[in-house]
Image 1 (cartoon, one colour):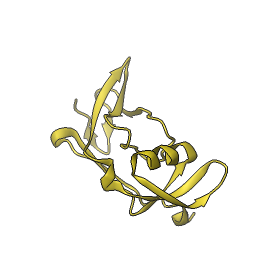
Image 2 (cartoon, helix red, strand yellow):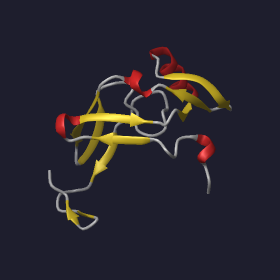
Image 3 (cartoon, rainbow, N blue to C red):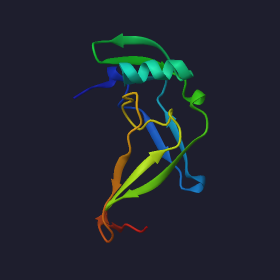
Image 4 (cartoon, rainbow, N blue to C red):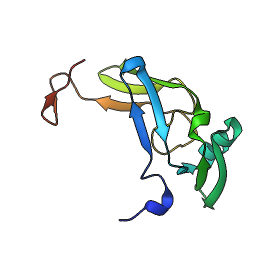
Length: 118
């Protein structure tokens, strides 16, 4: 299914192990929730909307305005989460509030033929 007109499917999210830096490249536009678009405009990393409906907007992006971003791993119970240190550090669809992302399998789990090491 071709969704190129919604501008979220070409967004790039880069997690660097050195310094735990994080970067976003939306290629100039992205799909965001109305709340995410409003917050992003307030802090300067979203611009005008080129599409809008009752829930979402396609917005012009200014990724450099997100500033230096970092990420960390946090364990809650038996689940590991990726968390970000900044509001602008979204991962995927920007709903307008920070969400942790459960990401790590249990110890010894095989991922693409490689053992996960923590």
